[in-house]
Amino acid sequence: MIHRRWAACAAAASVMIAAPATAAVAAGNHGYPLGQDLDAVAANGPTGAPVDGTRVTRATSGSAVAGTDRPVDARGRFRAGSVTKTFVATVVLQLVAEHRLGLDDPVDRWLPGVLPDNDGKITVRELLNHTSGLFDVTDTLPLNPPTDFLPMRWDTWTLPELVDRATANDSLFDPGTDYHYSSTDYLVLGMLIERITGHTYADEISHRILRPLGLHDTTLPGTDPRVAGPHAHDYIPDGNGGVVDITEMNPSVMNAAGELISTSRRPQPLHHCPARWPAAATGPTAGDEDGVRAVRNRPRPGGHAVALRHDGVRS
Image (cartoon, rainbow, N blue to C red; front, side):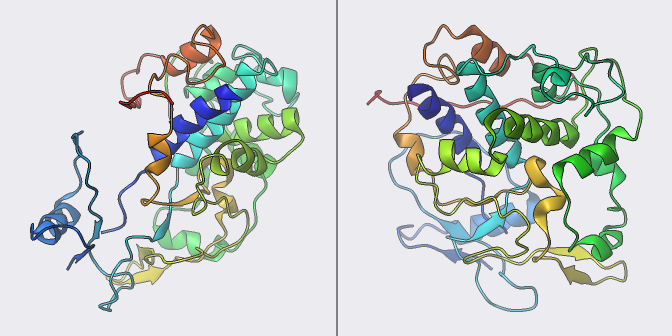
């Protein structure tokens, strides 16, 4: 369906994240000292600017394993964290475009009793734009100091368990009255997808987005602790001046809010996306007002905003 193609393109745009941070430079830089510049970015933090061009040069900086000279592979996978939310939101908006769900539907209509403290007021739209007021499940996890997380890194968590952990805390404000980024919102959306479709949110993302766009290196690993394929290792401070390798961990603790594994090497699907966005990004026609309103919400103070530009001729 055409609306799946539009929405899948929106998700693909969010997957193009720089690989982890001396530099290994891919062929094709034509003598330009890209590696030196990339090392500076790794040291000082990245910035970005849109440019027009036809040649793509790939480069990496740093080492794949601490204490070694093993270069970072430009094809490497990484845990993409909250980029997962973009894919979840895309599926939800597709369900809206298919008239299987309404943005202003109360969550209780589909998941009765899951959100006990909201009197049935929280809507799908408020979950999508982080105005539900739900307590952030991340703040219930032992992450500070990071080493407190180590004993639970292999634990398996389900969506209901994580949502229950969050909703054991009072809501922060009445739904729709303020903004607060909360991973709980997207855990609930994951449950919503599963209730409506009868499939896991991971299966729906794969069926609707990953396979159609050929994103073969992007996965939702479920409870698999490994990062399949080439990857740089991930570390946290050990509290004593050293680090602990946490590359392998059970990603179900992030679930629908952050379990995605992806790569920076898949911009190609964007070239096949229709050129006009967001007017028809979430529906079969440009007049699908529900979908358009969802992506045109004005950023609130302290909030987040996403922009996508795609030039080209519609195929």
